[in-house]
Image 1 (cartoon, rainbow, N blue to C red):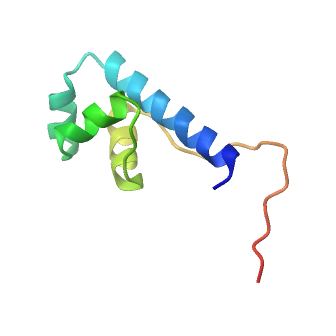
Image 2: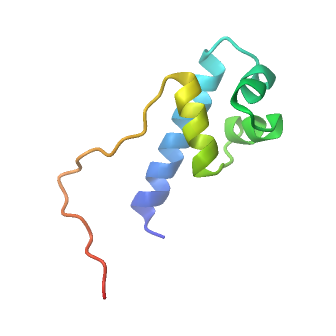
Image 3: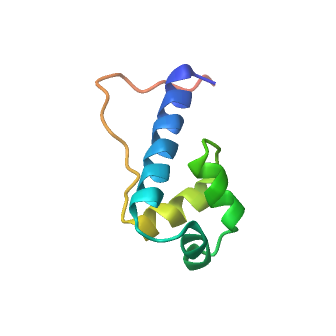
Length: 80
């Protein structure tokens, strides 16, 4: 896996963790409202990972948006 992808994933997870902490809601309340296990919230806040589906639920709940950002680089072409 590319180090750029790992760095991007890390930055996303840090932003989600920060939004969770700044939300003013308990981790348990966020988990219940999002329909995910509270241990997943704990894992995220402590530097862990989660599925894309969970990430999407949390972003929607926290008012965040995942979207591509132009980096100035050309996209990597898949080899056939």
